[in-house]
Image 1 (cartoon, rainbow, N blue to C red):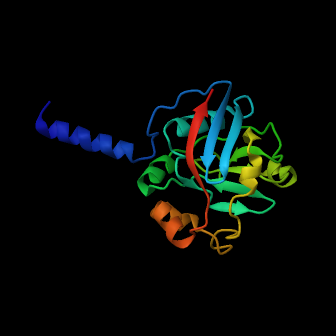
Image 2 (image 1 turned 45 degrees about the horizontal axis):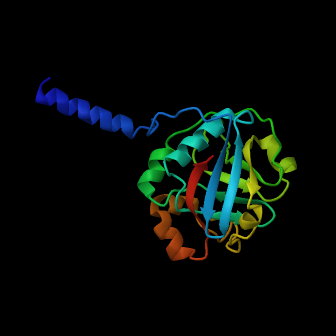
Image 3 (image 1 turned 180 degrees about the horizontal axis):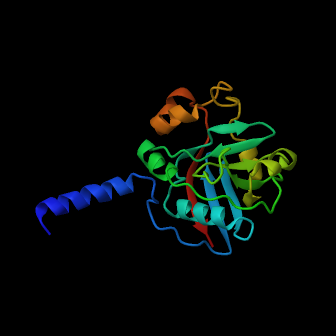
Length: 207
């Protein structure tokens, strides 16, 4: 291979890596697994049921395994509704994973209190890294809109209930963190403008 061909190949590979392909090859998750979130309010344990939503369960498993949710802010915490996270503190890491879109799972379980759900944009098959926990029974509001639980909090729901929520809804609908600005500023943006936010310090798959 000539030097010119090798250079061209390296450029093409770099472009492919930035084009939205997965940063890593994802592997199927176990039928059930637990994830511990060590947070600034205490530990939270999530039990994931792959049969509820296999695509979401697999994606969450791989994101946790690669440390994506370490040092994630609970940037959208709304009283009697949800607590959301999923914007990595490093904008480059967030951009890389945000480009990976997963297909929608068909709904099986209602959005009861304590269920764990991938945020679902209005367009189909566009889920990425954003996750929320229902801290209210939102089944009447969210079930018909394609929000599909893949797990449930089995320990520490009270810790989720106690994360800082007074910033309210994010911009432009409220005075809370802007997801667009957070995507470019990462944790530096959160800490400068919203210093009272709580965080996931570390997320790990546990036995």
